[in-house]
Image (cartoon, rainbow, N blue to C red):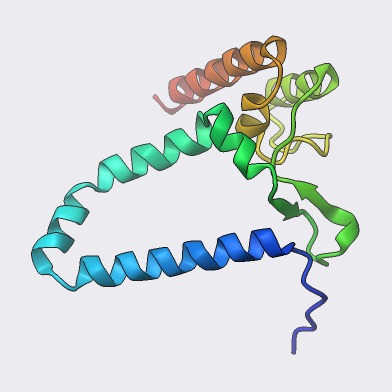
Amino acid sequence: VPTFGAELRGSEELAYAERLHRIVESSTMLICSDPQRKQRFLSCREIVIHNAENFISRPSVEDAGRMRVFGVIADVRHDERFVQPLCSPLGLKDLWSAATSVIAKKRSFNTASIMWLEGSGAISPIYIRIPLRIMLWVDSMLEKLKSL
C-alpha cells in the first residue's frame, strides 16, 4: 500500500490543475458527442501536435513566465526539499552546464534551474537566450543527421 506524503503543491497550482482538468474533460465530452465534430478534431491532429511541440520547445517569454510558478518534484520520495521551479532565469554558469551536457550528450544537467531548459531560456537575459537557442538548434540538427 503506498504511503502518500503531504500535498506539496500550493493552492494556485492545485486550482490551475483542477480548472485545466475540467476544461479538458468538458472539451472531450463536447467533441465526442458529435461524430462530425470528432472527425474534424481528429483531422487537426498534426496541428495540435505541432502547437504542443512549439509550446514545449519554443515557449514565448509570457508562457514561460506564467509556468514558472509551478514546481517540479525531482525525487521519487516527493520530499519538500526537492521541489524546484519548472523554469527560472539562467545565468552564465547554467549556460555553461547546459553546453557541456549537450556536448557530452548527457541529458541530465547539474543545475537546479534547468528543469525545463527551453522555458528557462525564454525568461533569461538575451545574452543567455541567444546562445542557448543556437546550441539547441545545433543539437537538434545533429540529431536529425544522426537519424538519416
